[in-house]
Length: 194
Image 1 (tube, rainbow, N blue to C red):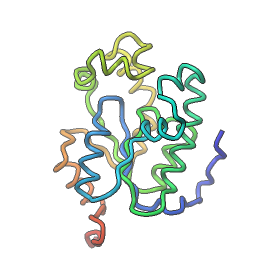
Image 2 (image 1 turned 120 degrees about the vertical axis):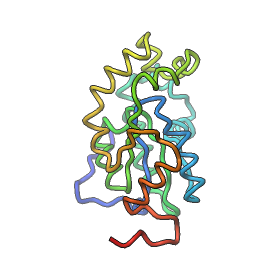
Image 3 (image 1 turned 60 degrees about the horizontal axis):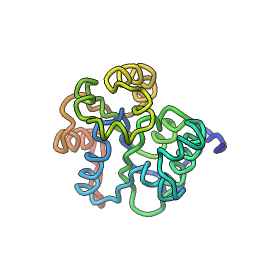
Image 4 (image 1 turned 45 degrees about the vertical axis):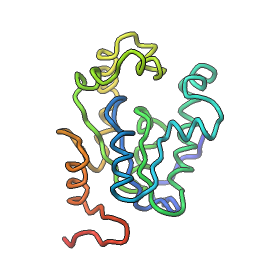
């Protein structure tokens, strides 16, 4: 298990990352790629990083090590990603990432965090059966919409810790405007004066 992170510890090189949180289907990867291109930053999908670093798929890790084992691996990979030296990242987290091992505090400490708070009915419509089958927790639940409602209730206290929240149409222009209002700037530019 990764060691706990002291509240006053800084992540070397982590200042300025933009991390997206939210339920499966919220658009973290899609919008994350768009934001990375817009802000000329590297993009990282945490699930893909986990698969790359372990040489195993997320479903395989869940099957062999259970959710607790997966969450330990996820937290370790997250810490490595946030310690990234170089251009700050745009990071698409897994839906459960903020809920374990003090990851939400770590994400907030490393830069801006944005909760994509998409209505459950919209999320369920975005997750066709073949997409549900790829996600271990959803696949085990049997019904996407009921699982999403129950999961949102359990995870909301973590998601609500994000510094920013998009609860309307989370389009690239809307999110870029929201980020600009929060002092998030293009590389090489200064944030707007307060």
